[in-house]
Picture (tube, rainbow, N blue to C red):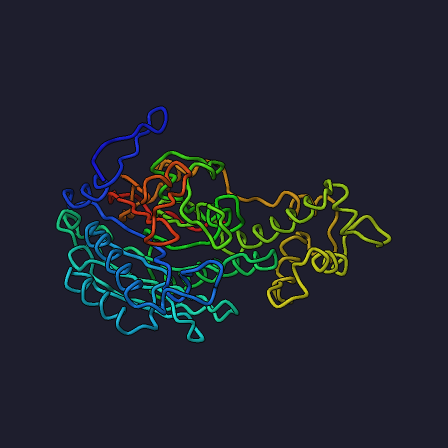
Length: 447
């Protein structure tokens, strides 16, 4: 890993290798974050023809691989480390990570998935950069036994503390979403993200926090083409890696970070950033728009035009409108209800109330177009690299936000959309982002 630069397009330079990490060490004002799914030994197959033969059966294999992972992490020395598929069920491996990370100055927090799945999350923050105010565990209590961690930390680097009136706190979330084994799980994955954002919002309200930077880190098990990506974008989050490389929302093919068990390669590992100066839609509004986006996607998959879709929902009603019964039946036929991962009765009623603007109990063609067919997704811009000052509010209170200084994926081949056959640390690439704290005014929620 040298410090050479590679030109990736007009006006854009990707700083490969150690430069990205070195910049965070030499500049005390910078903060770096690494997210990495390290592939739990209980899931790593040693023989693809025999799925029962796992790395967890051979101690030398999993021990050596995890020692190499730790070597890389400690070489990078990121201020924040977020790991997924951490083998919490093995005391020896846990103690190794605790000792090596602890000796290097990190404060570690671990959370296993529910129902003793064996793996979970590890989030570590370096005590030279952060004071931990609080850490919270979020249990989704879903059939996938997924979990998330929330850390509320204060920046303590000396160069950031010159003005005590400026807030210097951030929220860090580490998670690993469900894999979309079939289409019925797409809604559940969206619901998992909704739960995370609801929890973050509740935490902010309960602790009377003004807007502050939020980092969502982890393995999202979905690409930039998916509903989860669009949902987070609608809430003002930007993909840090895409911001650094000036990629748009449509540039899903430019990089990859995972080769899954089906042999497919895609970009699924993200460090999402929400700055406190960005306008935000109400969370419930974004959720409804996201579900209606899935609804429309299913309608278009069936090759239905706008008029055809209205007729489909209208079914056999006498008037030129959609009834609740017709709406419910359409949800059933589109596989959004009628199974354990489907919409609940309360969620269906909420969606109906969002679409039924005038509250008369039916949807006319205008309401169908506004509330379902043309439900807004990602706001005013399709660029992932929105300038952090685009949405500044003319407020008076200042806080700390982040600009993305650099972002690097390892191994470097994945930055070109190539998965190297000789890479053996994990089935995921490692993503590291360097942030530069900047002062900015606070924003607010919008409807």
